[in-house]
Image (cartoon, rainbow, N blue to C red; front, side, top):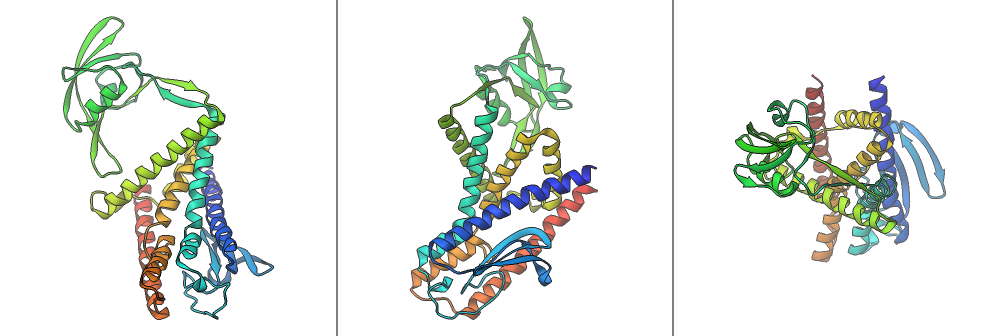
Length: 354
């Protein structure tokens, strides 16, 4: 049953994200007069899937459920189609800004979707705001604070003789000391208790490690207005953009190992757990993955939207088109690297299973 929940949750989330992403490309293409030849959810490798011709566009669902694509006339993309007839409805006839707009359409729609979902969660479910106090709301089981005997309701007074006044003070003191002994004093019903705790460490997107002891603050639930929900939705979007951008940068600078990345199996597992928790958790996961999909696609790498945009910018800067044969080689190399990366993260997923 768990496996079925994971599979259906994964397909539900991925289908929506792919449809929105490709819809972004479709809308952008239509807005600049591009002819959209194909709109697919999933990949129809070997022609496997269902399709229907509507006007000039072939809409379809590919048998292979990961990903999707919008194919426009006159563009060398993952299809490796080099046909060009010199018509004004073809991609190659458009100027640099129009090409960048089309190639960025999917990413923009993913970010818009995330913003709407984050805002909706806040509007319908309220917002949890940490209390401005040093009282522990929750001690996480089997973590350092729990093992030292701390309980919910303890009020932290000082850490390493630094008197804390709010939760930010606590975070700053603990996060700065991964895998180190810290000396705490806390108040429990008027009794002052002292304890030495060995912090554990947690890897953050920048590739650095921070100290943690497994405690959470108390939270107040507020109900923002519609405008307030939009404000929090934008904050969440910007926050996740920052987190995921740091992760990508850390990966390319060597501070974050590729073993930390997960693929479809891990996403399916997390999606299944979110489904069990409830609709809010599932929608929140969808919003986070939408940001993730947008960030990955905007990378200036051949085969990704960012790679197409980079080529358009280069052609605009040099004032001429890059030869078709050169573009074909670039796309082929890009696709090969993407396939290799996919197999690596699949290996990560399988390794986690065992």
